[in-house]
Amino acid sequence: MQKICHAVSETLTALLLAAALLLGGMLLSQQVLESDFYRTSKIIRLLTVDSDQSPGMLGMLTDSRNRDVLLKFTEAVANAYVNFELIPVNEAETFSAVYESLGSLVKIEEFRYHRRNLVIVGTAPDEAYYQEFLRRLRSKERFEAVTGHSYLTTDNVIRFEIECVPAQ
Figure (tube, helix red, strand yellow):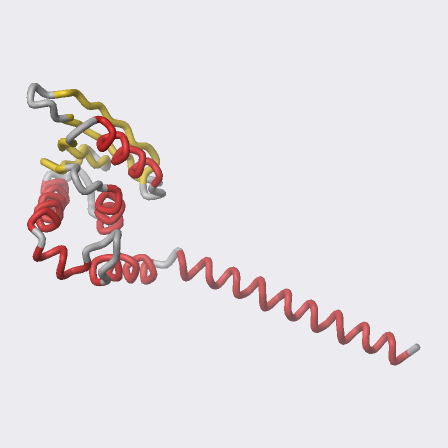
């Protein structure tokens, strides 16, 4: 009987130790995923690794469309900082969210900040491309809210303005 109690005690101790290790691992992984280091490395990976979503750093700098989007976004962040619209914090994540949401035929004409909100002005060849861009932006956790309006120009192009409210 004493051997059975001792075996049960050892088993319970082992199970509690395993549960504590599992819980500790879960808490540690959550801390890592929420850390600035992880977010920064994710952005660096987005810019440097060639994939379907990202052209990589080489593609970002050599493709004129990608370079143009990056330069317009950088200009908006700089203007917002100078005009005291925002103090840029994790704006690389904002750029990544927007860039990942762009379709191949959506053209960005301007980024600007209104307080903390990012305003995106551009064109799309038709309503479907605009709606898909809007849907992708709304699916990003980076934004609390995404609103937009569009109209058809005389050139049969959809012109839009989208406002992205950052998540708190």
